[in-house]
Image (cartoon, helix red, strand yellow):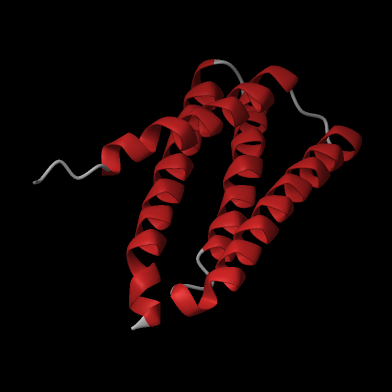
Length: 129
């Protein structure tokens, strides 16, 4: 029963991650085809950072469910958010220090994935009453 409570949230999180991944892949392929391969790779890396960090957050956020696990739900949510921020900082630091990337597509695609994260949940609103 408790696992069934978290199932709709997990499904929505999975759909959101797939939409983000699709948008990042589409933009990276478009940049690679129109501008250069370096721009496409940089775009894929930038969007990938956001999608990976968001996937870790989703895994943590939906680890527990139910009223009896309210404290665990809150703790796992905050743990997921902290991990998301740390992963983002570590991956950006790694990319800046150890790779040669174009900064414009890297940051633009990261912001695109962030925008999808903000706007896409509107697609999931159920208007049936």
